[in-house]
Image (cartoon, rainbow, N blue to C red):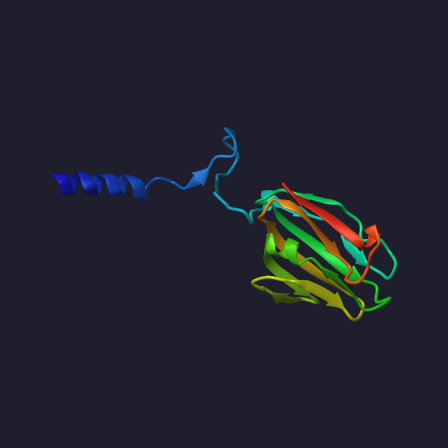
Length: 150
C-alpha cells in the first residue's frame, strides 16, 4: 500500500508543470521560469569612454542580483586602463567580449587598452557596497567612476 501511494505521489509531481503564468490572459503563452540571467533582469549601462584627460562618467547605482552589460571603449589617445579590484571582486563576471572573441574569466583585477577598441563586459552585481573604477595613476575625480551596489 505504501509503495502504491509513493508511486501515485511521484506521478503527480512528475506531471506538475514548471511554468509561471505572466497574467490571466488566455492568449498569453506560459513561459518557463528563469533566473538571474533572464531578459527582464538585464540592464545595459551607459558606455564608458576612455580618452586621455576626459571624464569616465557615472555614477552607477546597481542592484545586487541584477545582470548588467557595459561597453568600454578607448579612442586610442593613449595607453589607458581601468583598475578596480574591489569592484571586480564584488561582481560575478559572466563574459568579456573583445572583437567578437568571448572570454569567461573567473575574475578580473583591471583592464587596459593599448590601441583603440571596444570590449563588452557582462556581469551580475553580487556584494552590496561602494566601489570605484579608476584610471591607474590618476588623481582627478573625473578619472573615477563611482559605483554603488544596493
